[in-house]
Length: 193
Image 1: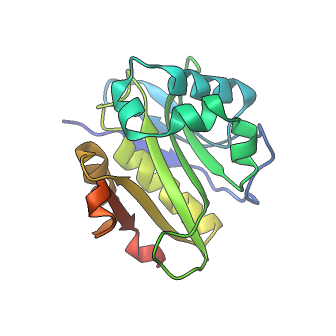
Image 2: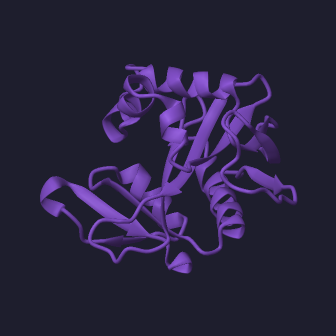
């Protein structure tokens, strides 16, 4: 199977960007010829699309593996963003939100306090399963760690989230024992520790 190809632009930005500020920082070509734009930050329009995805009860995978409904529907994107969040978006030529990856400061549980950021990965139908998340994830991780080289990256996921854990392993995350009784897994990115 052919894989998506990512091309980036040179970027210098002070993070976080202003609320609703978005910059095009690259692109992705899918094997079928479709071109997607990679952006840092979300415009108001993309925030609305993010909320639409969070509300989509038919997306059982998203609802089962994330807190996005609570995060973006019950609470506000604006309050979430003001916690020093940095989203990366993969956007179709027609303006559809294909995927999002975000970073934000948060110390992992049971780790020494330090300069830690958590990261989250989402892809949305009809783009889910098309192989976009590994190249998009590598691009976002590389770009973010270039812009914030002093930060270490971690994430938490459900122990039964096999697709997520496979992606995170491809991106270089290492799994640690953590709250196994609660079905949670902690993963860190060694190159940033």
